[in-house]
Image (cartoon, rainbow, N blue to C red; front, side, top):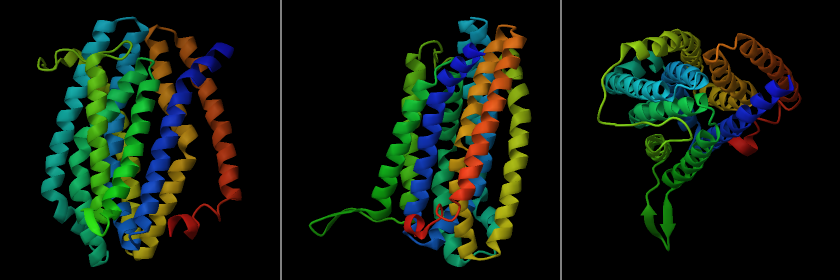
Length: 350
């Protein structure tokens, strides 16, 4: 059990740090949006309920790549791991581009259908925010799939470093574009409000996508993306990737689809209710960090054990992670109850 604990901590600790930064930066972004106005926070909450469906979908597809690569790494079959890396990355990027095009075409009617009862200013803000953030779907896919594959290969430090950098840049660019810069009364960077919030996210995701691709091409410890211009679909590799990814994506779509339906109901309650829901969701994401980190670690560790045909090792690992996550989330739950009145304080969220 000591060896299992060591493996879990070694893999999960960098993931925890990464998830902590990702969530904290998201909370800070929401706080900055709060200084624009409740309409901006409401608009971001509305659009994130749509964006999160696709992010969860891409994350679930990435799980297929993570598991398959982890199994090949467990078998010490580096060639197949690299081939699976390219198949997973290219196929999901194509899917992301198709979804981006469809969403760009249907953006206006979709917002009207889902959130038509929202105030006009909220809809205008939502339209601006959605129009920019949906263009980053392929970049999100590159990040999720590449990071998942690296974790599957046992490298959690590289995704951690890239995610921390990307999220710090996200906050910096978002602040820059929301409020702008004036020097001696001269506008150097124009204040763009909610459009600036979207541009900040898009800029950070672009930089993060470029960095992770460079890492994948150069190679990180084990896996490497080779011969970028040479690609053809290999169904023998894609079948297990999507065999795992598609059921996981359906589950994610159902879960996040339910959250979208809830958001539609909240829209009818008014702008203040929407803004409140967005703030509480940001806090909730923070509370889920321990569980999310262990889930990501479990995917890679169990995949590696299964690749080595070590069923008992996989069971021990999963059993330990389940017990650990239960204890950690129980502690988080108790603390959240104790501090529930302080977390959504107007001091932080305005």
